[in-house]
Length: 476
Image 1 (cartoon, one colour):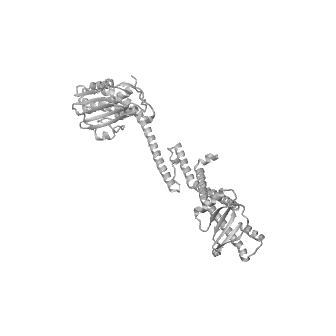
Image 2: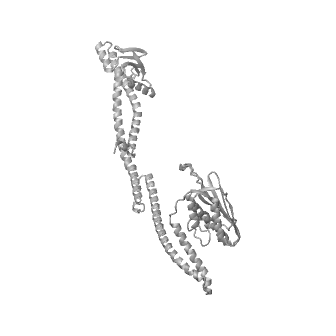
Image 3: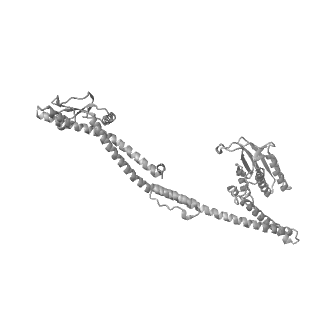
């Protein structure tokens, strides 16, 4: 693994951030530390200068060589003491340059110490400074010395390097400990979860691949438990889907063979209608209707289970011609029954759809309305209207029938559950809804009560902007 790839991992980034944060903390400690070192350095020189001055106070006369030695040991150029309100130059030697600044160490603030220490580190030039402080053991009112900044700066740099090296060692040692801890407590459990997800994705139906929660960290254990629950639900759903698929295949085979058998039986039952036996005459219509319903169920089941419905071939469709064809077919089916049809469809209205699939949808809705009205034995009316707005085409199919029962409205577009009439199987509306969805539209039940039922077909004119496609022109 390359260094770049390592720092792109959770381990690498945590290690890098730990080192950065620890070093930042050490730097925040380093600045006041180096300023405190400067203060101690200067105070120690004041103390040594005071001790050196005691030799002169003990003996009023010392030779120049001893005085130079005392000043060299103290690391200063001269020493001034204030005793009994008298300022006295105790030790002195030539000063190489003018004094560049004075620093009072009797009551300095933390900000002053940090600022003065930073100034010394940043200025490489040798300068002479005056330092004022309190004598130790209260041996006077004030002590004042002059000294060079070069030894001070060298000592501060040496101290700073040692502090930085120690900080680096501490930061890397701390980062290593945290790295190991995080790897054991967080990274390894996360890798365990990722590995379990990858393994489960290879064979989700295998229950042995479901993760077993084992993390000790509360949040990670909650994540593992949630993943385990989701995997169990998904495995159960996949098993149920597989069983339903197998059941669907078996039902399709049974329906196919049963349809053939019932078709043959239907041919024989047709002959029973010509029998002179009164019992046969009474039973034959019921038998014929039962076989006819069974054949319809087999054919509907096979049609629904094929899952081979082609995608709609969209083209310009004159909706008025299509509606007229559907209504004409239904007029032939009603015979002498008192049922009227009305059309409110502009002859010039052209919409984009698959004419065959749209014919099946409208035909299914009109046929359901016709059968519902004829089942009541009362007169009625079925109306079909179509219009458009800026976004979509709309087709309304309404009737004056008895309305849909509550159970049918609850599962209206679900196969085998939303049957709207006695003897129906609930496949017609489910198929119609799927065909409309294939056009990107919606089939909606707008109302259904004792005054009648009203369906609406919404067909979009173009793609939405979120799909990133422009509207296509409608072919003539």
